Image 1 (cartoon, helix red, strand yellow):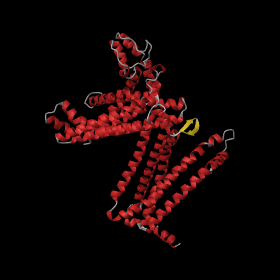
Image 2: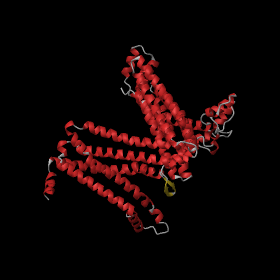
Image 3: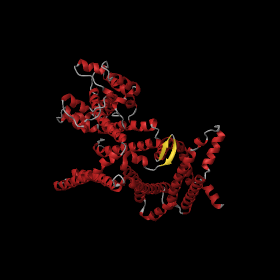
Length: 559
């Protein structure tokens, strides 16, 4: 018991007070961490679980990657390989950071961190296994209670039975065993190894090392599981005359070549030698051609996927491309106009901002009435006054370019028809709504530009356009980057006003990806499939965000 007395005396020392303060801080953060887990992380993890099952009202059998394959066909496997690669990359970055922070004389001691870190990583994996094992039993409580009087005692009894099922209880005991070993080994390693003296800040390093090992093992498991699923689906696709392994390899290598061509081109632009620029530009061109050749499998993959999913993605791209540039340009124009010393500019700022704060359902309903397909509709009456024929607006499934071509007597091919007229009306609503918000944000950005820079440019002989082009616009790049980022993400998540304004007569030409997910979840009650589509949409949004950061982020000037 001597070590207990020694530990008790330690609490009044400087080190003991530091430990108590750290524990107090962790206890203060515990409620916030619990809320973040319950309302932030847990819904995502549960959605992953649902997407891997056939789930219609109640949980069905485990189907693995079937929902993802049904939605995007062979693209599902590169998607999971990217997830595995991201986990391994995160593990590598953490390990590299720990290695560089270690002092050369404490490298051996740093490697010893792998012992407790490995046990903590194993405890995390055991906890995941316990959660996956216990979740079906807990979810089945509601179905066991059917036909019985629902009382608190019944719930407690069923919960006890669920948590003490043989497989669940064994997983729980394994988790407690590994967790206890991790705590014991970490305590012994820190106490007898004098870790605090040899390597200050060792608890955080143990935590980061454990997280790196956890990510590494999880990445390996995801990659191995993806290979197993490929082996399961390969015979089915072989009957259709398709080589799954060849398709997946071609898509992944083609995407890698396109990324490599972009990197080489960026280096070519930054090179100072003409000869080096020519060679690197040629290499980038060859890499790009090779990438496009390998991506020739994409049309086959798209044709084999869910037609509604791909059409929803194309509609979303149309919607994003038709709203974001126009609302940013108009927002910048009105911001520059209202930044001038004109009479009543405060009133105009309020007027422009009002559409953004107007309830979405109400304003969308007003737009729906304005663009009524009846001849007595407000917009159709205006067209009639101008000598133009009335339009079906929200009920028109034909593309805008097809309509213009037919009016001019030009035959437009189907691939160039463009977004439907119904979607164009929804685009107009979105632009009308968000121009005021962009204007206010741009006004804040204009107010942060020092007046001295404009005066210096004017003294140097620059006119108003040159001042705007070479002084104001570059200094507004952080604002433009922020607005474009949230605008693109917002268009891919848009739902309320599209749901209010869509008509069955539009034949699904306004159904964006979010509406496809909504229909699968609430109309068809395919919960597992809808969850898989939600993660596909998340992957698309994340890819666009990273691409935007890569391309536009390098052109942002913060000073």
